[in-house]
Length: 324
Image (cartoon, rainbow, N blue to C red):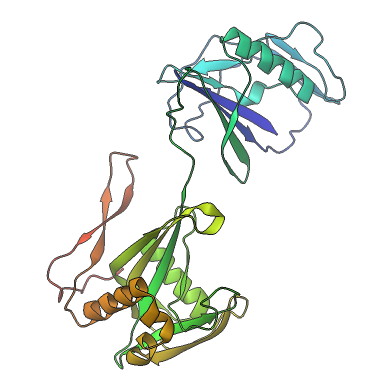
């Protein structure tokens, strides 16, 4: 486990990473902090070269300035030093995760010395966590923290798939929620770095075995304080069926079938849920070309220089030749 920290003009962020154990190394070398642009949205600027000696059992890595002892020894061999760090473009400091002390006691001592040197005191707060790292932050000014909060929303997608017989592809889920016995659209959460329309196509395929193509985004709803006390976004997508045979995922789904739209929307659950009923009515209007949703257009953004999708009103409702 190694750690990295980000010190801004008004905050200090701390990040822990899990790393694989390295093979035995024994050498002395000049060291320039690595480019952390893959981990942090800031460009780095190199500091003076530093040397560090790290001992972990029989494995030794030697570099200048800090001497770090093995994990089974409780103290540094000489006075603690400030942690190795460099400036970012915001006037903050990024702590180099590759030159951290190898024992918890040595790291705690070096961190305390570093914070004192930076005119700070200990008192980090949890910001967010993901598999592989934990982000802690410290707000420096004596005023309310202005850092943006950690992730606050879950993003889900639903696929409205209707065939030429006006039959909707529906599922019954295996769950104990209030919709467990309701015929509903295939839905689920999108994966990391997955586009909305791709998530809808994937969820339909996983739950029913039916292949589809994206036509348009019909509507989305926004609710708060649901699972894990987070807000929740659900995007409803119109999908064109490319196959009809159903093969359910029996780990999540009780059953799946093609159901006549009138029977589907006539279920008491939909009659009582005005938001879902309206969304399903809009889907049917889109199918009948009386309503136009958002299409997905792939464009390059200056934000990251990559191709991504912009969703927008695509013009006359009868223009649906370009499917994804």
